[in-house]
Length: 564
Image (cartoon, rainbow, N blue to C red; front, side, top):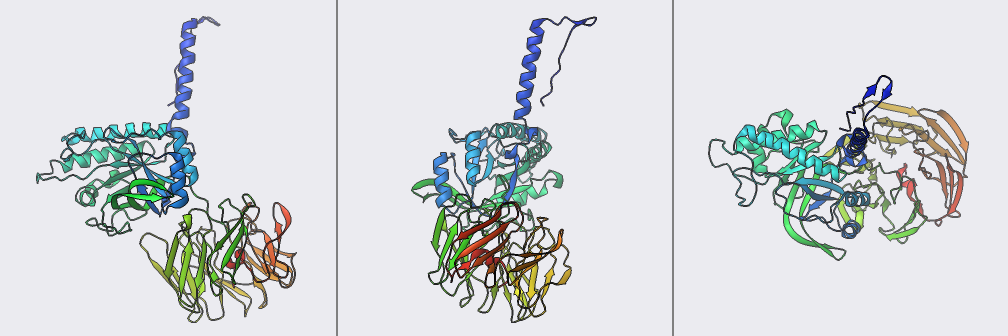
């Protein structure tokens, strides 16, 4: 790709190549350069994928950009399929261009590139083109479909590294001899082998019946990386998709199409769609891990408060200094902010101790209510499994247990005895493995205890006194949470890279509001002063800043991430 051979003619030291040949060589060079720029080997940003654990939809024709924006703003969906290629593709795609892909991806959509090529030779489709009954020919055809799909994907900017889903509609081999299923397996083997050779990820859409009867018998090296299973059972889970057992394609390798075609209207725009739930790769740039109280998702902590007497959240967005207010909660609720849907933005959430219930407001204002915990529990929400989504969790002082509802597709739970009565949860990524560690602050001894998620090692550090306000954060930017306490106007830091330091900043009565306010990936020393509603920030890059935002009874949101 991008290579060219050039011929020159010399008479001794003098070049005598005819001008016509020189012009041909120039054109060949220009074509090679263009080919290289458009090649799957160029690896532009649109070749990336990410794991989606959210809802999605598929529809026949790509919608206009404006309608996709409306659905992003108003619907509960995060992913959309696009029919990008295939000799049996039945939908016109006037909207589908590289520019469309870029614009829709920038909104936040994950894309499911879908190819409708040759169908099974025993397919009941009367108008479909079908691959050969001969297994050898079918495998070659599968490889050919992969090359066609990759060329079409590349034209849309979906380059090497992208996941491609082949739509193999349900087929029924009634021969009893494998006359149909054998060539289908060969075809899908050829598809997957070629897709992988070209640096893409192989996915296949179809029936779980075909998956269990045929696909699981494809040689492991040639099996599709991910399956998209059509079973309209109205169960929003990627597991329990009968008759395929749950022990196949288990590691974020499934999409489930769980509701068939129907009209849905969001924001006044109606699409005819199928509904999907994912635990699988989709085409789209990786979403940066959400920072504390980053409501607009720009990588900076936002100045923000929760006002218990009105149950209101007030946010000063760092992206544009715009003010926003949301009524959500009551005066006994405990703020529990986090990125519960994994879209890179902090969600409004509260834990209601009297009920042991969580109330979470995610994208487009969709409410999730979940009973998890009991009166007396302390909310300790964080991303414990490293999937980019905040996990609902509580620490129960009465028995020293942590109860975590993992955000994985199986709905698993983690119960760990760690701590004692009087301890405060101090979760953070102390070992730098991308997962929050179970941790407590024990004021009675001025000690920190945590359980490394990377290897299960117990660590205890004496740092502080009983009256300190704990304020853990990554102050030196090495990806590991540092121990820190605020004591009557002085900060004491024990950093994993920069060691010990003490900084006078703040006054008695202030509350620590650790966060990355300037977006340099280092936690900033910062306080909220209830007496005057002032925020005082000592930013590691942007220096000092003071902002009036709040009242004496407000609870600063960044403080909700600290032991309370």
